[in-house]
Image 1 (cartoon, protein in one colour):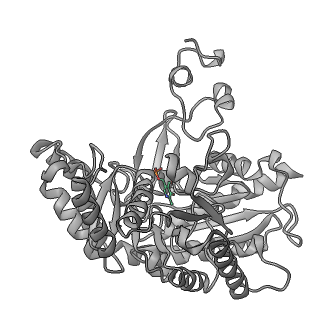
Image 2: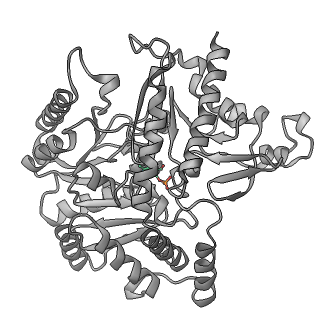
Image 3: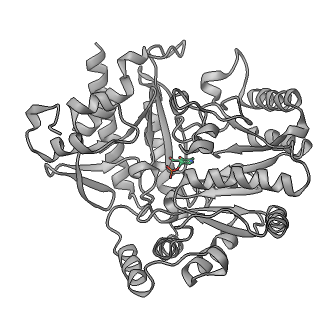
Length: 459
Ligand code: PLP
């Protein structure tokens, strides 16, 4: 089919428009705008097909923690491809990279975990978590205890159950989601949702009380689990207010509600600790992780489960005859080999401590924009940050969404050689963990130029 953008001729852009259905893209706009084709990368930068270089301020999709040319990961993949390119874990089969990675993740977990289950994406990991929660309560003879509570603005993926857990309208609208038994509670964004005179701790208390009220309204005997990202990522980089998780977990314990920590973005150093659960004191029963597990060089996700949940799975599978869940690529050996090498590199280079140090520099440098007239809030922890733009600083009045101010800023930033993530009126930052202090300064300087361009554009 010929491209609807004739000015692109038979270019790679035109071929893209003619054949590729793009995830997370305005498909109508894409027909005239066309793609940005990335051809390579080095360190924290990527290069497009015109030879322009960009600092990847979001590590792709919050994931390429070791940058874009780590040779050891390539070698690990090739080594494994030569040894055993595929095997599965169904019906008692196994392989060494899968076993070793499961051991390693269980050992790394910040709370006692029993087993690791593998999948390919964050969405599949969260879907698995939902199914395990249901399985668990069936094993315990509580078939009515099935509802799972997510949060407004949370992001947990796009498969049917994961998209339902996600609390963003565009992931539900016209996809006929969410499915039943999935509920959403308040978004813990103090800057946007606090009441007059309410400090962070009072706000956290109000949200915990609201969660408790929801559980009581639904009936505690029907509520099975609560899922949370330690820091909300794709919802706008929302750092929980002080005491939030402490108060929420007290409510969960009171009503025997499981906690699922979605560590898909926060896991493996992003917040300055190995897991976001450590940074914010979460004691999860289930943890899901992906992205930086392989530095995104191969698709892989993991679900860690506590001993009681594992025991419930054993009970059910004994009763039914099989644990009827698993993917062809659950624990793909090449992905597992790359993950093992990734974890080795994190350890050898002490990249969690590095993320803490350069992260502090990023937060401080971005913090200098707090006084800028367009900046409402600068928030973040470790190497993840968000800068929220506002039409009126004093009243926190947002811009008219039709203006697409953050997207416009991201466009200017691209012109200055940096890729950022616009989310509503917020710009998201989540550079590769290997970023140097000098590269942090350069990233922030380029963002500053884009902010100046945005100011001029708005005038
Ligand atoms: N959970 C979180 C916190 C995420 O940020 C994402 C993706 O960005 C997912 C789950 C879904 O992961 P995937 O896109 O690999 O399905």
